[in-house]
Length: 380
Image 1: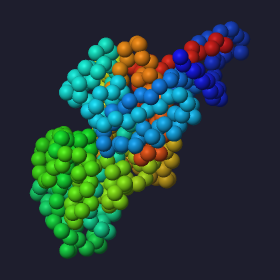
Image 2 (image 1 turned 90 degrees about the horizontal axis):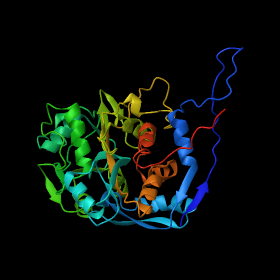
Image 3 (image 1 turned 30 degrees about the vertical axis):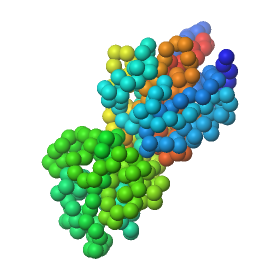
Image 4 (image 1 turned 180 degrees about the horizontal axis):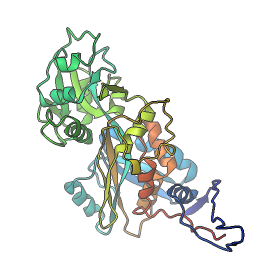
């Protein structure tokens, strides 16, 4: 059983135009622009009944509750239930493009047909357990030095030169911490350093740091990070905020970019690039560098309004979470749940949790593999 809920949006379409005063066109079906197609697809929601298990990385625990708050208002008999990463679930979210091992494990749960698409972004930061250093500026070279082990003191010129007026004396030496199993946050940070400081960061894009102390779980990492003076870790910003840890600002060619500006997060995620395989599966890279890819970013759709003369440069390090969805034809709940996550309401719920919505051009592209269809254009 399912419920069909229909909402109507005011969409004004210029269906056709006269070629001349003497020419009368009785009917036409012109191609619709992407934003209109997206609006039509949003207008009709097919609700299902049931609780969909969602395997979710520990870093984003609780995100499903934020989505349920709006989902229940639209589809009261449908919900998401979080299970730990690695547990079997026909809807699985990963903190970066899924690895071959993750895909193989998911295909055991869903042997018939699996779909992969990006689902949201998340800002990645260098979190610091140093009182008073909120917003300390880190250049790519400084970040690379900290993470490759060549910068171990807060008084290193790579740090102090970018932060005149700050007294770094007396701070405990830098201790790097990370997850032993790797993370999407480290993947995004090292992708950024590979692009912006390749002479200082030579390891390439990796999921695991070679140096420092490693922990099995995010809970273990955060417990030790908050207990160790001078410690740092590359983590999602939401984790740093939850633990009230200072976060470094980024330096882009002398311009300081702060992670607490949500507009700059929406600009930064515009640096995403996506590839689509022959089956329609979409895989996105981390959004790094801060400069949007023109075809993947729409400032108006993102409601980005910058100050006069301000460059279109955003937060330069965002990981991109992906979801794998089972579409076996017998159970519509996984696909329906995935469709809701990429709708405007779902994306807005994720944003209230502290995550970053997909850029509109990329979000619309997910409609194809997720089988979200717009109504056919009316004749005029």
